[in-house]
Each structure stands twice: as C-alpha cells, then as structure tokens.
Length: 186
Image 1 (cartoon, rainbow, N blue to C red):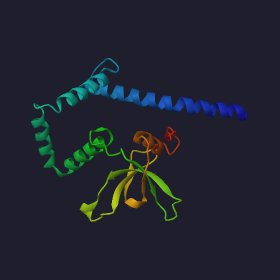
Image 2 (cartoon, one colour; image 1 turned 60 degrees about the vertical axis):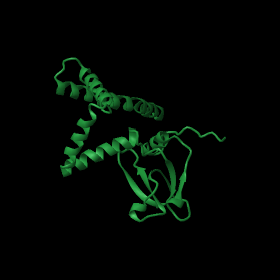
Image 3 (cartoon, helix red, strand yellow; image 1 turned 90 degrees about the vertical axis):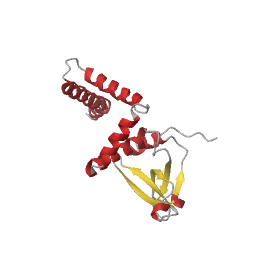
Image 4 (tube, helix red, strand yellow; image 1 turned 135 degrees about the vertical axis):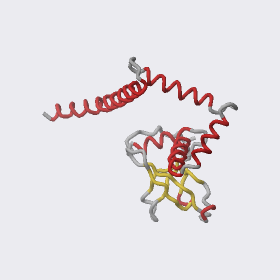
C-alpha cells in the first residue's frame, strides 16, 4: 500500500505542474481569442505577441518617441492612473528592462550573531537622499508569490554573492527547493 501511495505522489509531482501550466496557457489563449473574436484557437495570442513586438520595435524610434512622451505627460496629470502606470512600468523594468534592478544578489545578516540570514537583491546602493548614508536598499522576494519586502540594512551586513541573479531569484521564489548551479571555485 505504501508503494502505491508513493507512486501516486510521484505521479502528482510529475503531472500537476504540467496540467496547471497547460490550463493557464489554454485559458490565456481562449481569453485573448474571445476578446479579438478570432475563431482559430491561439491566433489571438499570436496576434497579441506580434503587436507587442511591433510596439517594442517602433517604441524607441524617432517617430513614436513624441507619441510615448505625450502619453506619459497625460498620465502624469492623473494621480491614481499615474501611480498604477509608473509602478507597473518600474516593476517590468526591474525584471526585464534595460534598467534591471534585481541583478545584485546578496546575503543579508539579519541577526547579531550571524545565524539568521536572507537572500535578497540590492536595489539602491545609496540612500543618502533619505539621510541614510551607510545603508542600502535590499529587496527580499517572497516564496511562491509575486511580492516581497524592501528592507533598509546597514551595508556592513550585506555580502555580495557571485551567482546569476535569475538563479538566486528562482531559488528564493521556489522557497529554496530549486537548485542553484554550483559556483566554480577559481
């Protein structure tokens, strides 16, 4: 009986992630297709990806720069919309933009004896503008969530680690279960 239970659990571990991923992707395809009233499954998704890529191509050109600047000036006049727009833009830039912020993984000592430590990412090297001359801003992502906390810590409690930031982020977000490739000792 224990063997059957173990096989069942192994089956869950292999099946559930694939099914959940497939279900979410299918839901996204169907939703986009229904919004665009397209009868071919997946055509809306392809059209959306193509449109976003086209906007990305045209975005930095001389022609569209005034249009983007004008749109952002309009957004600046609307308090709630401005907060939503700038927060979303900053978050996307932090992960995938040219101004990536989560590219400096660190270990922060959280207790005086050094026994309690946490993985994080330096997002601001200097907080002099806030009067905190010897501190840095460290973002601690939460496991299994798209959230986290930014904590101000003395720079002396931060140790940079030589690791790929995306590997460290995957490790933290997975609750420590994702394996991080071993760093070679050179």
